[in-house]
Each structure stands twice: as C-alpha cells, then as structure tokens.
Amino acid sequence: MEPDGWAVAGLDTNFYAITGPHVVNGTLLGRPADVRFTPVSYRWAYGDGTSATRSTPGGTWAALGIAEFEPTPTSHVYERVGDYTITLSIVFAAEYRFNGGSWRPVVGTLTVPANDLHIRVGTAKTVLVEHDCLANPGGPGC
Image 1 (cartoon, one colour):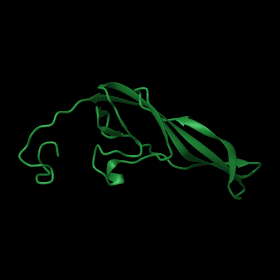
Image 2 (image 1 turned 180 degrees about the vertical axis):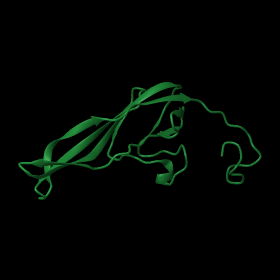
Image 3 (image 1 turned 180 degrees about the horizontal axis):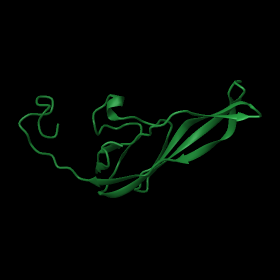
Image 4 (image 1 turned 30 degrees about the vertical axis):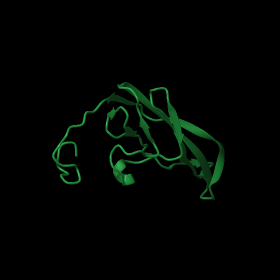
C-alpha cells in the first residue's frame, strides 16, 4: 500500500496486490501434468465497514504514472482517523493440462486470503510556503 503503513483521512490511499499467474507442475500416471492458477478478481475489505471487488491488482502511483494521493482503480478514502486492518482475498481461476496438451478450464474458482495490512489513519496540516512545489520541488511538503 501507499503510503506504507499510514494514510491521511480524506485522501486516497493506494492499495495494490503483487500477484500473477502461477503454474504448479507434477506427474500424473507417469506423465507431466500442470495446473495454472490465474487471478481474476481482488476482494478488498478496508477495515472501516466498506469493501470493494476489483478486476485489477492495481499498481504503485509511480507505475501508474500519477502523483501521490491521486485516485487509482484500487484506492480507498478513509473518512475517520484510527487504526484499521485491511484484508484482501484473491480469486483465482484454474486450468490444467496433461502431457503437454492444451490448457483446459477447471469449473469454479479458488479464493485465497493474502496477508493482512495494519494501518494508522491520521490527519495532515498544510503550511504556507514561499513557492509551490512546481517552482520549488525541494520545498516543504514536496
């Protein structure tokens, strides 16, 4: 998540999952068999009574090419200060292949919990400075 471990009430907090397709290899009846698990959705519970299901894992603000605290497809805005636990469940679709054949879908999905995040949401105060961040990128708060 961004920022790492904390958030500002009223501003976007960026959550993202680091995951992707995963293949498990094995042997069945003396021949190679593979099962591929592909994430298809991400179920976020933000700890404040709200939740969201997304089809994207999201990404860092830098990877998305946007400024910090800007909204992302996976961001969330906390309205109140406090400590929160965020949970994520990743829903995977599965496919299998036997002896190097073509991939065949498995009916249904598999939901796997990810690690919980524990964050503190606080407030921020702005200060008046001589220049804005465009004129002085090294200034306070830039």
